[in-house]
Image (tube, rainbow, N blue to C red; front, side):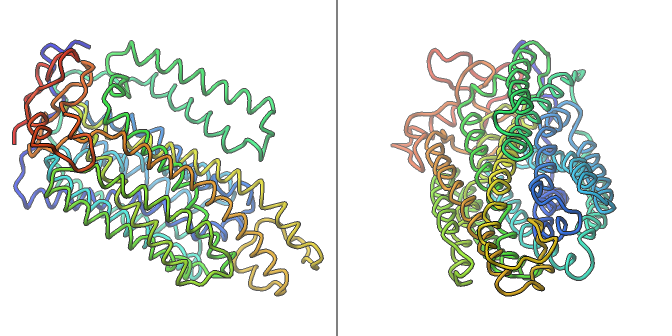
Length: 565
């Protein structure tokens, strides 16, 4: 694509403070919907598999949602860049609500997984749309404060989700875990229709990369199926796993070739030349892999190993979310004041690694107070990482690619979560059967008892059988957490590769260097260190509009205005 006379597909919107607050409120509602359904199902999982069966595929209830929300994010981001974000944000709400209603009427595990996939398709648009629309109305510097609010809503949803899911499961039915989305979604649809700007339209004729989207989706799906089915449904060395793995790799190669030739690639390859985008993508993938993969099994541990009912299990996740809420809000405020962000993912990922290790040492006999403390540690680390990555990548790309870059950052975090949930689910499924057999050896086991143990059934078992099952589940979940520890450690190492560019205070065409030209963002070595700025050189380099290092290509491309403060 030529860099000559390129017009931004959308124009930034200048709104008064009151309108901005209403827009943020609308976006927070959308984020609440998507985040709520990542967590509300967690405390219902044991009851769902106890009702529908299929404990060996428990992770697919989560994986299906994560997978479709992941593969759809690049397309949602690109559609928003080209056509305008409001209509697609509303469409994603409708798709999400339809998937929710259908999930609630499911009568088999296969139906539930399919409708969860539809739900995830809408959730992908909610996540990307909410975070990209901020870039239309709020400057990168101010986004620190608002992204902190998004982190707070994510934490709130994660608190309310398991609690609400447990309450509905215990006092109504697990089906209401999905029906509850309908009234919340209806409110979000009305509010977004009223307050979101409607004139964010493309300035050129859009061309959608449908082929690239389908090929990328097929590649990701094939690889996630390898992780999920390998070692459970099929042996790792079996023909189906080999075919899926080969298909995934070949499809990725085909996708890369397609993206080099299309006019509007769904995920432009030149973004990977941008060091901020590459670093945030890698960090997001690894954090998503370790976190979503492991924490999926925390409610299982609380209900089966610790004996909590679904409602109490939801309440017992509160310390984790309190830590997330605290650091998410505080880090957002501090980022807005200082204009710097790197120190937060560095420290946050280190604290996350420590928290995951501490949780891996928890057993069925561990005191509740100690377990809650370990959850707080994990939450404190998480709050310093997730939202900061979005701020960093939005600050490092041209405004015309705000949506697709935001989608890319979300994509890699979500794909990490999909792989993590699938792989850790495979680890859990491979271990739980054998450990149950070992733990129950010598006990008189009730007829029909298998790996699908619901909390209600567990309470009616003889004490010896109950303790044996709790021990087997506890040791299996501990193994999952231990596997996650080195993965979180890798995320800590990757955060040191994240370049730091001082956040600017203007809305619109805000990137100092074009990733399309091969230039990295203007910066000095001093600005790439966590929280440092030697003699002001880093700030000066960063705030010089269109500045690039010698020999790295053209400065700000034509049609992209220089950033001002």
